[in-house]
Image 1 (cartoon, one colour):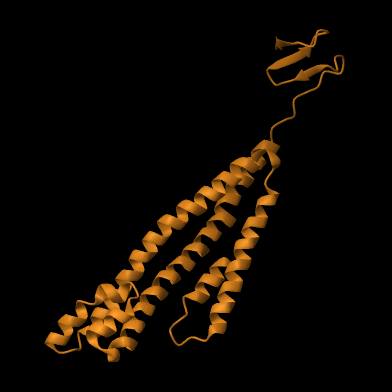
Image 2 (cartoon, one colour):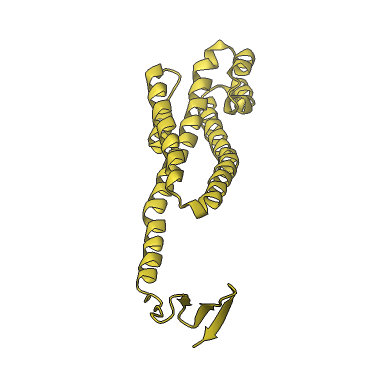
Length: 200
């Protein structure tokens, strides 16, 4: 559901109706909430570890992911703007290419001051293209991560559980109910409360 919200964001453009952004935020927020609620199914003994891994992966993934996606979006916006500037005459083309950094960082007002208000639609379109590419990659990455978590990790966990289920249970000693059986050792509780290990 989080991926659906991000993919909805990838369709946004300067002319998109606000309702599309609302739908994207609803899907994204619901998916994020479901991920947090899923933590309640973690066994109590692993809750601390699971919470630490979850929070660390979210923080590290957010910082690294934003850096990577930002670079991808800036490159896509710059490429789109450069392609549009290639159709301008010589001096205007050089001036437009010099504004590629402002376009990639959404400083559209700086572009219009340098090139004129007539270049605003082209600058907005180029920046939107970079934004859409970056957000689309983020959504596809979430879908890939969901498949890995649902099928790859689950298969590994199933094999571990199957292997554990196939091990015979340690036998109990009916003559000594205080003895705890182990495949190789038996721990016998002495009257003083201490345990003695008896090797088989």
